[in-house]
Image (cartoon, rainbow, N blue to C red; front, side, top):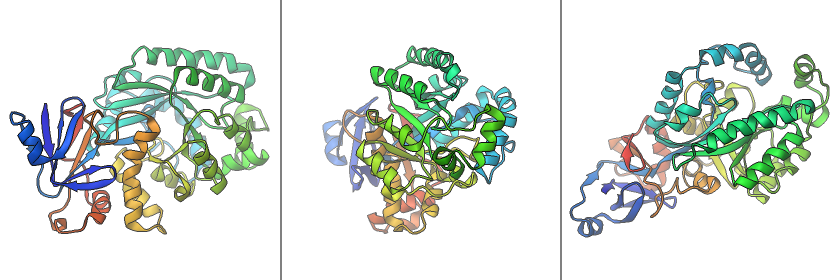
Length: 403
C-alpha cells in the first residue's frame, strides 16, 4: 500500500489541491492528505512537490504497433499517395518489424503518460509484445477484406486470431474487435464480426471517412479510389455506402477513428447511438486528410495512430498538435476538452475502471511537473500548460507500480 500526493490532483475534470491517494493495485481512498496520513500512519507518502499534477494514466485509444518499422518508406502529404506506398512497401515493413521496435513504441508512450493503449492488430505480429507490455492493452483484432468470395476464409482467420487473444485475456490485456474501414470490408463480413463481438461483449472500433478520396468512392464510386480499386481489386463499385455502413453499427457502440470528412449529421448520428470519435490530428495532417469537426462530438478520444502515419507515439505531442489544429476554438476550453479526451472520456467509452482517479479503479497515474514560473497561475490554465510545457512524465504508474 502507498500514498502519493502532489500540488494538484485531477479528479472529475477538476484540479484539487491538498489531496492524497491511497492505493495498492487499485485506488483505495482519495481525500485531504493530512486526513489520509492520519488514517494510514504506517504507509509511506511520496509527495511530488512543486507544481506537480497527478492525472489518471493517459489513454492512447488508437495506434498500430505492427508498422513500427516505418520511418521514411511511406509517402506523406496525400492519403492516396500514402496508400499506394503502403501497397508498395507493406511486405518490406512487415519483414523489418521486430520486438525491439514495438517495445520502443510502448516505452515512448509510457514516457508521455500513457498507461492504456488501443492497439490495432492487422495480423497478430504484435500479440506477444502487447501481452507482455507494462501498460494495459486493448487489443483490437482487425478484419479487412471486400471480396465476397473470400468472406468465409477472412472470417475464419479473424476468428482464429481473436480466439488466440481471448486465451490471453486478463486485467492488462483486453481482446477487442476492429473493422478496418467502409471501403475495405464487405458488409457480410462486418455483420458476422459485429455479431460475434456483441455475443462476447467486446469493444469495437473502425476507421471512418479518413480522406476525401474515401468519401467520393463511397458516395459515387468515383475519385482517386476508383483507379486504385480497379488496379488492385478489379472492381469499380464500393462495397458499402456511408449510410449503409453506419446503419450496421446502430446496436454496437463503436469507436470511429479519424472522421475528418464526417459532417455535422454524421456526428449527430455518433452522439445518438453512443459512438465515440478517436481524433488523430498529426496523422490527419501528414496524410492531407483535413480537420475533424471535433466540436460536434459528445465523446472525443485521442490517438497517435502508428509510425505508418506519424513521427512519434507521444500522446503529449498529439495533444499539442490538436491544440494548434483547432485554431478557432477557445484555447483554455479546448485544452480542458483534450485532457478529458485522454482520461474521463476514454474511461467512459472503453467501459473499464481506468482514466479516472476514483476509488476501486486501477491505480494508473501520469504525474507531471509544470514550470516553476507557473506556481501562481490560476487553475484554469493547468490543462493548457500541461499540454504546452510537459515533455514527459515525472512518473508513470500502472497497477500501483512505476513503469
